[in-house]
Amino acid sequence: MHFWHKYELQTFCDLRRGSPLWQLFPGSEGTLDIGFSRPVESGYEGLIQCLHLLDDPICLAVSDIHPLAQAKKVELHQLSPYPLTLFARAHAPSLFDLLISAFHSQGMQPQVHSEPSTMQALLTQVASSQSVALVPGCVRNLQTQSCCFVPLAQPLYVSLEMHWQANPGATARHWLDWCESQSDLTHAPEPV
Image (cartoon, rainbow, N blue to C red; front, top):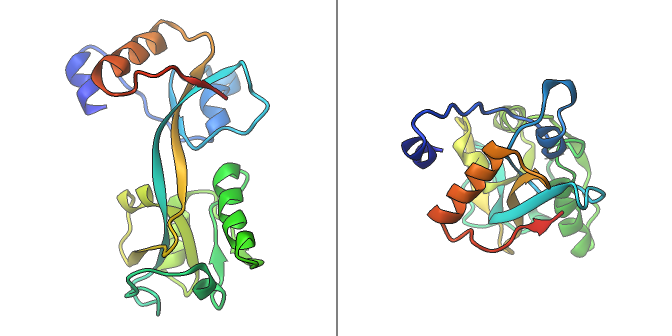
């Protein structure tokens, strides 16, 4: 956004938080031009275009006094003695399903203790308890006082994508043209 503002001095960016689908179909509030989120669920083929931006590494979030806080890396089986907190499936089904599948692939059945609806609430809960959470690495940029982040021994990643409607308006088209000219995002968008 910083580089966009240098390019388009007269443009105002209104940033809003919402689920991937809300970003593009917010109902009576009007639609947003561009959304950045985890992958959108299937069933919207032809309506939404997406561009993969990066793979965000999943890490363990624990309080700074948790027994795993000083670990260099952790294995999923090391989490089994602790209450597991995951970001609410209703808000990020692809993230939730990825994490549950990681446990299942190792023959484990995780017991999800809590599903906060915001990452900040998840971090607050982790910081004040003995629960553990698996979160995208970008969560480190939130208010993380009293939290530690530990890499997984077997790396796991979740995608971050840019989304826009299949028939973008002028503002979205302008943004997409600018992105293409400023980065290596020059390949064709992938339909969702």
